Image 1: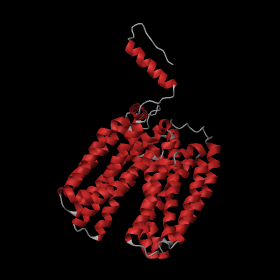
Image 2: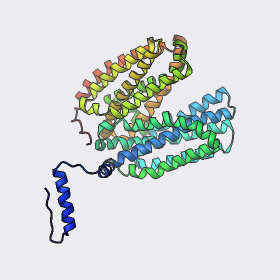
Image 3: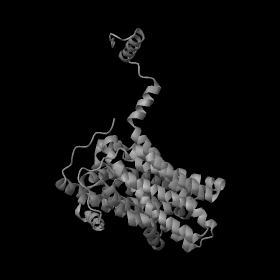
Image 4: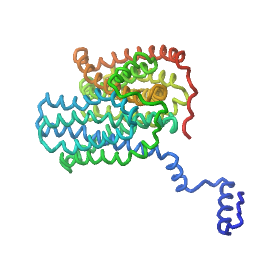
Length: 441
């Protein structure tokens, strides 16, 4: 029993302290309100970060679907539809590395605010001129400012992994995916019907402004590197690209990220027509294959992060390099709904594990060579892989058959497995492994 009694303490105070001490001694736990408040205080950064990432994902998911629907409403032809779809990636591919340089030079907070304000304003202005060409111009301009947001956010999250624990590495991608691929698309049709295109775009712009007000809590935790930033020159872009040739570990991580995003993109674009063509599925059943893969992918991102700390990066990579090729074999050979679902489930788990392991390795590389430049490279490699998977996969699949592409991708992951084994020993020789950081309690 805890007894605390100061000279000036009243009987009521002493009684409360005695009761509290007795409760602790007798094994009573604090009331749920106290436990909840303690959890919120302990995880304030992570909860606000998850909320911020979710709002960003939802707004982008709504915007992508709304833009497609608006283009159809404006009677854009097939060529313009393709250009509008591709325009949303142009700025991301061109600006990711330069934004990484700017993050190192200026810090992520002001860049995030600038990107959010400009992109949000452009979305609000987008329906002012009902023309497909104007829509194309706006979506292209927006794509140049989007990296200001997610490269900045990725930089902060990589730094904070040391605090929140590597077991939470998948939360960034998981919260964003829930918003972008599940909630956003579901809301888009309802919002455009209720508010019209003008009202929906204004709501999207407002969401971008909301993230500006949420951002200080997240970016206030960022600590700039003690070393002085490099001079802001175009040669810095070449220097960052040269890192891929010079740094064995970074090159390995980027290759794996490129391959993973290629596979995920090909699956998302083509599993529905594959299911309809080879298994004679209904459109609803074929669409359900996407849900199976998406739910297990998100589950892995949120629930399996602790495996990296317990098993280590190499074992997690090996597990994912077994799961992903197994899934691709099922998807490439099956003509049955149950087997295709099993393939989608395994693919989601394998890609989720791969994403967690990659994010934690990227965070460590960023601490070594600069988080801004690594975040910029990572932001370039992922979308490049997605673009490769959807375009090259479709072109090759047109000649060999779309389902056969899964078999070719199995070979790709077999090569990555061999590469990963070689790279791990090379990295160990060049950069001796440091102890695994303890996960946050």
